[in-house]
Image (cartoon, rainbow, N blue to C red; front, side, top):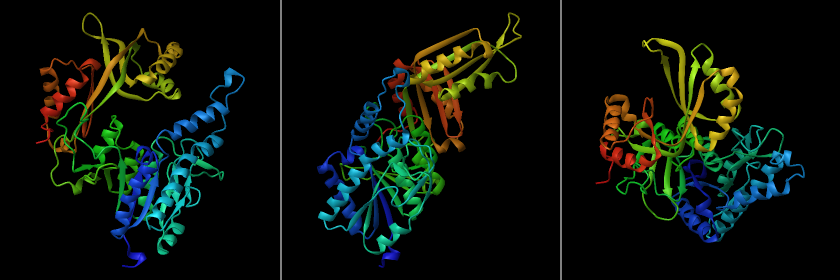
Length: 424
């Protein structure tokens, strides 16, 4: 087998997987195993667990102004220069450990490859990856260890990719290199039908479609970041979710055509920290939705579920008003409240009601496309447990409801059983 015909594999290790030298050595054993199987391996590493938060703290401390009105303002380019160093340390240590094990390896920083990004420091997007230099080194027998989470912006400065940046780096490299697969090593051993801490009979999935994983990630499942799944789906990069600490089969995230048996529902996802906001008696006229959601967007509030109810008078006729209900993350409630109160004159509403004691529960499955009755079965299972539904939202492969947070775990278990997701 020549260097040119070797299959390529990308292996990504998160912060807990490389938290110290012992764990880096444990990860390196897994890398060597794939090298011995004949792969040209690219390893993507995060910073050691807790290191990025420490570096961010140092930036804030160093940039603390004397004027309290300017607190939190600092040069984003220097912020990136500091926080990117965490991954640089890990990549160098991983390369050293691999060399000690007899695996020829060298570290690469984002700018050395180069991974070219947009100019939005702290939340940059990957625009291009030039892999020629890496491929030449594969030809020389050298495996790559890449510092995740970073690239080089149009200004020639280090730019970081924001939350989930190392996963994004790994998937983008797998796409650019034409890798056979991208293995994501983390502290869980795969994707489960729901959180095993809530439902002990949760079952690990052998395979899950990109669209299902994207929905689960967006709904609060923390196994993979939404951006990396979106990228994998766009470029058809097969992802394998594996444990860094146990040698167990993982979960393959792939195109639905690779899944022989498609369950109606593949998983139950949830988010505890939700809030429901209702604007009462808004004038029902063209442009009112834009006047409501424009200020929220401008203030960085991400709106999720939306329901509109037309107001009626005593005779049952429409009274020219509407109630607008929507959900936001609990952490964004005060920002949303402030934005809506500031725009009250422009919007024109009678009252703002906030319920910050709700949770979101969702059932997800590509099988919903060809099976009717999923919503009815979901609602019946919740009703049987006496759980009231406050808001409903649906998509082609998802049904989500807002319920009282007190009933969250009961709802998850009830839905898991109703759709037959438990392990045998």
